[in-house]
Length: 83
Image (spheres, rainbow, N blue to C red):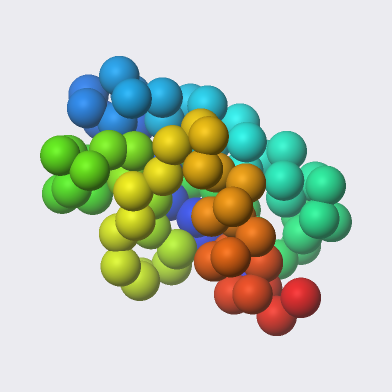
């Protein structure tokens, strides 16, 4: 199972972390990945100036917005699931 950690700290919250979380949850359903990926809300990934911060597993921290969530999901998360 791939864990997608989305920061909900102050800077990320202001920049729309809950929109990113909702987008990822919808995309997991759309791509039928409920058994392969899960979204977790976490506090501070240490990249506040690049909010919204997202980490896949123990990988690097990425900057994602509500507008870029779908592209990020298709480019980074779908391949990580092996699909």
